[in-house]
Image (cartoon, rainbow, N blue to C red; front, side, top):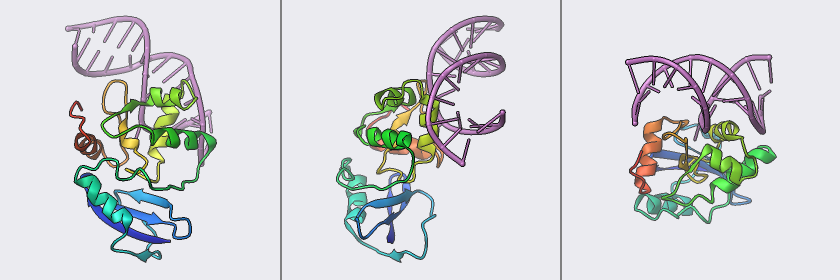
Length: 153
DNA sequence: GACGGCTCTGGCG
DNA sequence: CGCCAGAGCCGTC
């Protein structure tokens, strides 16, 4: 495992990657990565962050992710990654799309437990009435959405 | 049981 | 319209 960090429009993103699989296992706007992991200052993920910041909003598309969870959260995260940049979906819509109609609230919980922020774009999931909540504060969520071209929040 | 990044309805101004 | 209870709803711990 190795770790790294890079500045993004949402603040500094701290991440961890599994070197055997190459998959991202953690990404957060808080520095909560295991310090025993080797620190890397550059990688394709670092460059992807730079590209994303420069406007290449699909820069994370190719990256593999590994995240523990249940069948439910797995389905939610999978369908979450299908929400393209510049788009958004409500908690209820995502629930229905993933095959769990009526589970809007549970989707909120799944978003809150997402351990690979930004790459798994939980910030694109909004409430039916407004922007909805965010683990690191709605201002950051708003900045990200704005960066992706959604000014209506 | 209890608790969340929810949602819809109904009332009130 | 907008704002504020109230009451369901669903998966987790």
